[in-house]
Image 1 (tube, rainbow over the protein chains, first blue to last red):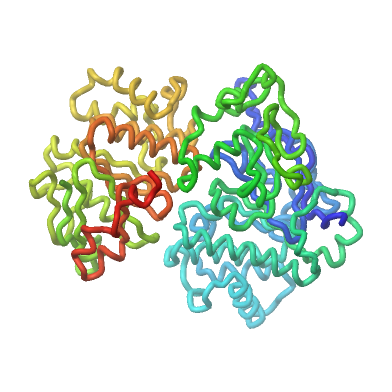
Image 2 (image 1 turned 180 degrees about the vertical axis):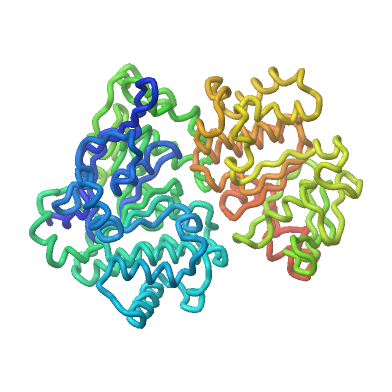
Length: 355
Length: 238
């Protein structure tokens, strides 16, 4: 099996912020990953580790003092090299649908959900005419399970869960091949978290099932960037991929096929969700630490604080907090296999090596 | 004892957020209050921390019914409570450095002299490094700011802690670290805790017993104080 077509292929993405006084902040360093059609990749890590900057980079929403390097390929288009006109007219909403962190803040407070949906439908699709727009907006709401009798409400009249669905409905209007969810569950209670991520998952699965039937080997080897062309433009067009950025490990476990762990701007582990949360478990000591902090596991915090992105130590950034650190950690470890670490935990099964 | 007796509270006359809630926290006890978003549990936490006057019912703190609320409450009563809110950003004065933020309750109660020592002590307890103490809230992460807010809540050595969704915005490691800070403080001082949240796994692990919001508001007062059979610690392995 050659693996499924990557919808998004990130190659060596780095983001630096230039600060006054010539200081540099290395928010993202040399990130490599693919997200395939029908797949959900969860990017996890502590707050301030660079996750959201990565999302902003993919949408061309970085502030003016940011410098990027590397490539983020969506089909033939490099999102990092695209100009604002391309980003505005073909990328945002059309190729990349954003499910925002705080739907209540993302929605326009003075307009009803219906009016915002109709505007988005008119902007992103060919639907014209009052009646047609109204019908299309209602259909869009239904796709995200937003109740039709709440369409005429303003954002402040909605619960957190319904506001989330409204935001999801807006993100789905353009039928973008990549859904980018940036902390979609922050502040929601557990039931709502489960419902929200299940719905996101459904949008990935639905699009996928239409076109392909190989769901058995989910996320098996999505690393081949070479097949982007053959299956990609016909059937693969409708294969939706989900990149979910979150610090909620339970949410990630619930929906993700693969997990990317980010620490101090670098992806330190990239592995299958089943291996990560089950046996053999994560290999990077930081990932282990995150899991051990969960209240249904050891509930033990990782000692210390993450380093400043403006003053990263040389070598492995996690070494100062790591009980396995040695002199070797003075050198930056490359991502070999699934983890970037000089002393990874053992990969007990072959499965972990394959992933 | 911290006793809420048939408390009704809300923000609009005639439309209370909840009615007739009874809940008791014993000294040294940790009670988790579990409820979905928007059920009124934060309002209850505010009542329990003297921050919101209820429409009816009584709050009894250490045997004395509370008659004055917020800034009108006597100082020794007010300072018996430490409160941590969900949104550190909204509960931190953006103009203060983290050191000043932690010291603010000392200043407000005329104990400025203790400030330097206590701030250094608590910063270490909460896991804040000294270089962070000179920064303002916009220069630190959510997790670092919440660490400072927890230190601020402990600075007056309160007998009662009220934590309203203290960890809802935080990652797993910071959550575990801050729960440990609160628990170490309670072990050392015997303070009681009311922890409000919507994460059952967390509250079950953290608290001695977890009370469901529904059990408090249903017309069965006995369910409110007894909690589920067996405490959380019995249900765990240790």
